[in-house]
Image (cartoon, rainbow, N blue to C red; front, side):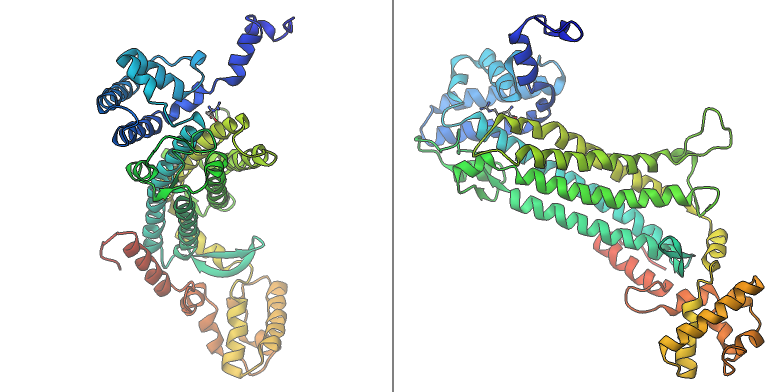
Length: 465
Ligand code: ARG
């Protein structure tokens, strides 16, 4: 008997329960373009190989185009009774073209069909993500160029470490996103082998041409093992792993935006376009978009974890468990691309408060390392010893309640009598960042050089200052 609390919707008995758990059409309809492309390539190949008549293939291809038109127009009626996208398309094809439709599934199975559909979908998605990530890099590199000389505090342990430049900070993310793109490209390269023709799992006795379908669907080559072809979901794992790492990068940046926009930090301001108000506290400007980027990282990593666990005990080859790869993958990649767009929007929108950043950059004796370096350079003191002396000077400044650069020379001389007033030339935050000209360092000149290099690589040809 159906459970009284929740059994109502399964009033139809086992049949209804089976349909509910088995049907994937509610989510795999997202694969319709890929499914139809795969079927068209298959039909053309069957005809060329003489497996079906050329006139049947023609009718099938025309019918598939018609089905695509209906789905595009929103007039197609998806049916749960037909389970999945493959059978929904094929059944409508039969209504449209009659018995020829029945020949399409020769030398094919839903097992190789779904593998093709998912690979094509993941490949398309990687391509559009790559576009979006390049745009984010462009937004970051342009802002980095514009803010190459804007000083800000550099942190380790979220404690004042050394002054850096805002542009330098943004370029760090350009590098991370560059590696993310590399990971996606790598996954794409490995997935680009066509499983079509593996059929259910063992291949087929029909004289198919797998090279032809692979080529038609823009794969590099057919897969080499039919069992692996229907069992493989590493391409999803790799893509979700790349997505998770990318999401973590975006989340770290989102976290910084949350911190930076707080009244206590006040490092940057987001316009109304990327802030929301509170329904009770009129003064609030909440960085909701950044918080959501940070929050969505959980479900993206969740999709990776879920898929890994779904696969871990599956014996060769296909198991219906694999149907569970879809919702997480679709959701994770859709949300990632939304996060990429949101971060790019916020980067373009954000206005750093240069005065506030400069103030903060000098807090916590952030130029202490510059003092130690001066002792090494000007007085030939070994760095370890200079470090120790600087520590004593810093504690004097603390005791007097002044910043390092405001500490009288006489006080410094009480620690090391050879110190001259030349030391003050390295204690300002501007001089500190200007001096760090080492490759990849924070000096405005170096930041401009790196921003220029990226913008050129990203195809932005504007004159750079
Ligand atoms: N909906 C299935 C999936 O997503 C398609 C493959 C079904 N194959 C099968 N033999 N039932 O995995």
